[in-house]
Length: 353
Image (cartoon, rainbow, N blue to C red):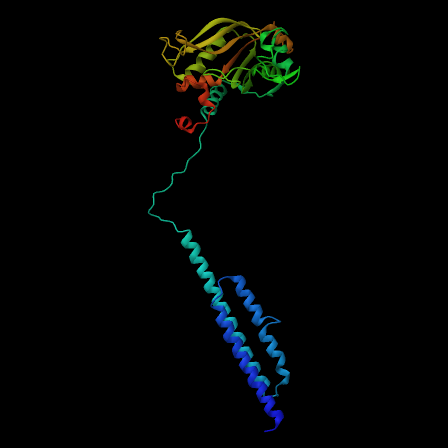
């Protein structure tokens, strides 16, 4: 055998050993790999365009024509073996990760279930909806108006003179000299009477603001439901009948109301409407100041000046109005003796409703 033949034979054996070593190292390293990133790095290292297997194949030009197919077949076989090993390792890593995740997320089906807490209406919203349904059933509409109001709609148009105590900054939250946070939903009456001709039957529920100290029966923010009826031939008897029906629908047929003469600038005649004390049943207690009744709302016949201010002829039309404090209605309905409980959001209290 010539010297050239011996060198060629030696090159063939070396290349064969290198290919076998590549396969051995690749499979050994595969056993230590734990994630997909390392697996991809190994694939590129051995099978990539610049990988170790490709580098060996570039040396095939030094082989004889008979040796090239043999080395080529061996290289293809080793490539296929490494690819198969990588695929199997990838499947094993995926299975291990899945098993680990399932183990971490395992649920003990024998444990008692967790009760879902279902939300419900606040007692203020619940009673508000109930009152709205009562008046809708009597043919009333629901009107809305701005909480930030002009002085004109909150006071002037309602026949409150400039020197009226309610205009004092100690009772009213003013934004400017002419703009304020409404102290009553009565302002909605004016908006409605200016834009709508009689007959009018509306209630206007919403938040109102007054500079009151916080105690068991007062709050600087509370809810009021204003009622207004304007038509031909409306009398005080219509007002009493409407209020009596509303109270009986809310509190039951045994509910009693009483009217006491009072003065409001926007109604004439006017009355304070009291309801039988829920705490003592009329016997007298600290809640009702030993009177047996609790003040609930103010009411009366719409003052002719208020009708005239809105362009309604008081010689043709008459009407009644009332302002109902929602918080007091809720307190009477559920036997609550402190208004502050309605605003503290204490779930121990709210879960009772």
